[in-house]
Length: 386
Length: 119
Image (cartoon, rainbow over all chains, first blue to last red; front, side, top):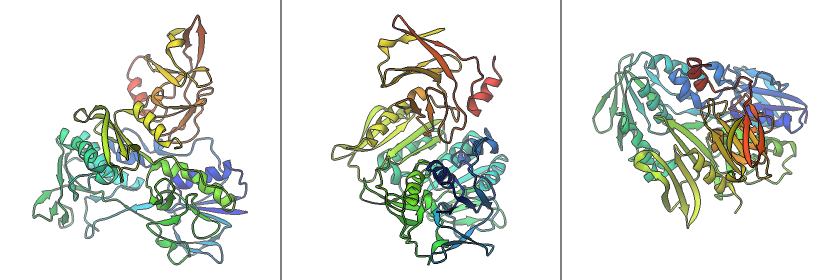
């Protein structure tokens, strides 16, 4: 293999580039990124960076003395993949031929139809998004967050700490019920009310009102919630449009085996855009967690370099964290499919709790609120071979 | 030298946090070795004594950067800087730590707090 192209220059792409060098690949390495920035860390964008307690230099993922001997094509968007020429086409019309391709194009924030061009309406995914939102939050006012998921909740928490008047609107009856289940979703999202942040659940958003600048969020039940700033946090979609017709099988992102292989030889996919087969669950799961973007490229790169001849290991259970209102929230495993949730330590009312999800008596997931020590032990146990 | 605890009171696979400023954690590995490093992850305010000890490495309980107990080196992001290591002496069954005189690599949130306090 003489040239490897890594398409995507965020955590998954950087981790893939590092894995390639660590696993002995010494050929030409080209990293293509649609943003103009070097790889940076996204989790702080809704937390410390948005709050202004850390700056852009703190987000940089590469270390000072790191040199991957890579060519960086930044501000370059991939627009196609030509399987016959083994080439990545770029939006400027150029192409890059490569023997091996790592797809790491991530996901993009979903938007609200009709919000285009209205001032004061934000999504939060990129550094540029975060800069714009940070500057606007600094002016204060009434913030309405559409979507009570993790991004929405973290923005609400940060804005509350900055002194804004905050309302969160969630279409489902319970926020976070998907990732955490109904019971714990209700407990975690109760953090909003604990801090005087309004949470409106079970009501959809009909649209936004305002001439040039947003002035309210209109709800489907007829209510109107006044707003100076709106953050739309309604999830992300995998960035795989550029692969349509390429022969890379797509199904909720790039459909991958348990080792990151795609339907094309010499092409692997990692990170938020990749829908890996999960041998524990017996199904494909597209995981948007930071830890997946960091850990899985090792396996995918091994697959790429070995031409698919390696036996995939069983990955650690998916793990993510969130910081809201000073509470450290940690979750590992899969809540879906659990038939019970028990509080093993602490008390939900104190927002200090370790809860274990079980199916047929076997632990399948664990949630911690301000319980890093116990959480780590349970997470270790979940990942142990059974 | 700062006394930590009795070796017999720190089982293998466990850690003890010494509440000095900045805190230091002392690990007793599964192989029976004892190491001391700064307790605070260099990325964010997390206690490495709460972390995941495996061999001579501890994984931060929050964001999965791993630190080598022997050298303090970090393997991968989000942390980028090493933690300090401290000399450990076990005498008459008691663990002592000689705290390093190097400057610690504290995370930005802690460093800014300490900047206002005594050196």
